[in-house]
Length: 145
Image (cartoon, rainbow, N blue to C red; front, side):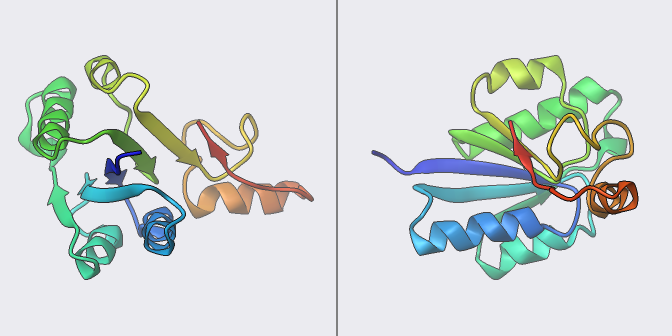
């Protein structure tokens, strides 16, 4: 089976990205991360990617007149890298309808709780884990969908 070219979207520290890098390096994922894109210039995940010589791109939403144009810039970047799979690894932006259609059945999202618990507006990163602890859950996990 051919190696899948993966594009990863991040907004933060890139811990999920690091896990993917590690599993690819161990041979557990038949893929290559072709590009890491962030909507946050200072996202540490971009530095993680650079340490492994992975292309990184910061796309500033403020430079675009609309949400749709911002998403089109991301689509163009992913297409320029001939991406087979898009992984949302701590990416905290909503995707446009066009984006979802463009990569239909080629998008995976990682959410740091067992959905439907602790999801929705404001539930991302460590906030999800803190909410689970505050609630007193005994079993936690992640959802990949």
